[in-house]
Length: 98
Length: 266
Image 1: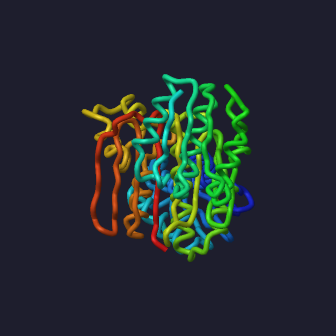
Image 2: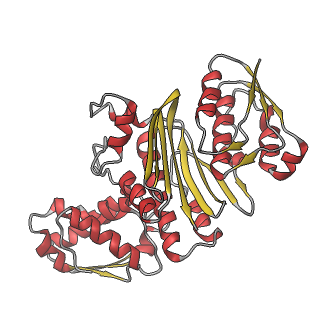
Image 3: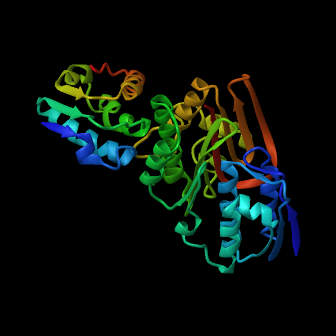
């Protein structure tokens, strides 16, 4: 499954509410053992709320999140968004591959 | 009737005078506001004026504006506000506060994100990509905080260029940080509550627990050698990251809400 963030979330890829919606979709795929791709093309997210709620909090959903994360593919992330997401995942002890 | 002289610079520096005005709204029905020909209005000042005016309308206070013609020409926004004065005991529409000129952007939002304002801010000013990211992050985190926690009807978002800095922030007149945090945490005073709110993981949200917004707001300003101001309840915290100084103090009057202001050197 592929989620194009701009297409599915524009204009709200900012709020925790939108992040929760993303996390539910991602978690469902990971639960099924399916690969999920998040495409951040043409987006500058710059939101701790969206990244924390949408991705970093997967750490709270799965005991084996670092194993599940191998199924999560993240593409076209802005350089600064990458730094932000990595720092948020680190706080949740979630080793994400970017 | 109460007569109030505005300070020469209307901005986020000397807030006690604005808080005195807000407090005086509770005891008077008629206010005369005086501006001098030398008055300067910084970007935060535009939002503060909108905030004060909105409160006056809500309380049904009559305002007489005493604005020199030269100042009206310099700041058409003062003319815009004074012309809205016919509205009594009704808060003017949020759109009537919108303002944009070469150096400023002001928007009054209701209980949702104003995506357009954030995008406009990023596009309007001559910022490099990193600064665009940082300004976007600040506005988004502050907007998320005010929407999620303040519970006010409106928030006042501003951005603008001033003395080779970009200024941006969000003001609200909802529930202050100390009042909100009292639901869950115990501190000795309002200053302690504001400092607590800036720590990671402090939140009163039951669903979608976070508590990262103000931490990142502070980090971004620290990385840019900027200035941070948070005013809420009876206290204020100011960090001047370029000089590594800070000011933490109590206010003479209480702010029923939270004003968060950022300044970043260009």
